[in-house]
Length: 452
Image (cartoon, rainbow, N blue to C red; front, top):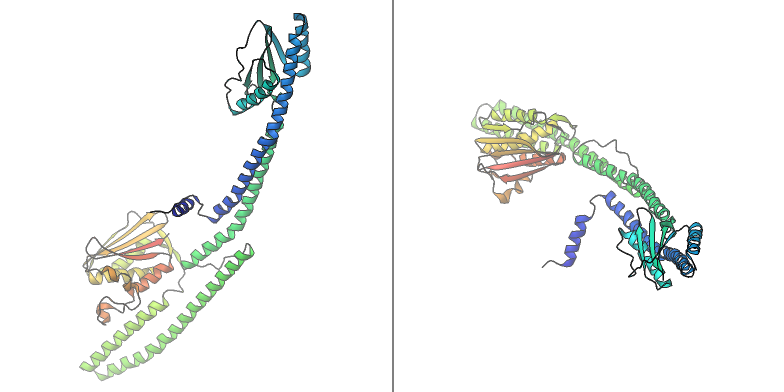
């Protein structure tokens, strides 16, 4: 059973912005919107309703007064004089239709919310001041209000401008409140973008460094906390580069120290002659040299190589042409990606593909290499073979240094167990991933995903 809290969390995560800028903007906008809504509600409930009620009360009193004067007038000439004077002084258009009647008080169906609102308020105030039937009709577009009041001898029709019932400053107030809030929000957004920009630059620099690219031009800026994070990143970068340099220097010395006695042993074996013992000694020396070279390649990598824009199709074809010399069939498809260029370390990438394709041709008779772009910013290289494959439970083990599926210690048959670890190290340095799957062709499928 799914708990309500879990549903709420999933719902919130679905609609919550994914970026820091979006979330910061949400934190800023929601309180402002709530404040504006509350302020508008209070304004309409307290100020605007009272103002509309007072204006309607005053106009209703004028209409009732005019109606009583008309009813008490002795002749039509007096009625015309009263209506003309009231219309001139009170900004009203008045007409009297003797003999007509209004059966029922009604404000009529009004078009639009504001028309209904004005009619409702005015009808309420007019109904409190007279018991006579009346009608109210608001033409919000023409900005006029038509009122019909039943008198003893007929109907008094009065037309008045809408401004007499409606506070004209309301729009100005709302425009000022919401306009100023919008301007302040825009200013806040600009400042917020400037504050988040250093964080974006830090993320880009970290991603570039994770892909093995240069970040020397990264400039530390922003708020104090962001500058501290940027400085910590640059310090970490310096320590990592120093460690790699020290390791490379140490291994260069180890390589020299190990190769010197091996060279003497090779010379001594040559002086012994062609006896079986000499041949065995030479074989041991060659095996030791291969093992040392493999160890050095794994630890050293291609740390000093700089990333450059490289055409991937010629690079892969070069590796495949070398592997074909072992007499294996290798098919290469690239789906019209002849001009596919990526920023990579070409020597390191060539070594990675050489190790993977080399393993495939070592254990299979046919190899398929495919280059494709499953997404806009992603490149996928798939190497499949029809060999015996690897058990799924060993997929993770083969990426461990010195692990060999072939349990023999012969470097000619199983190597030293560093081919795939070196390939994974190179792929990770480029910000990509390498995964193993069971191939539909019967063997193993190695999938290398790289960001473009």
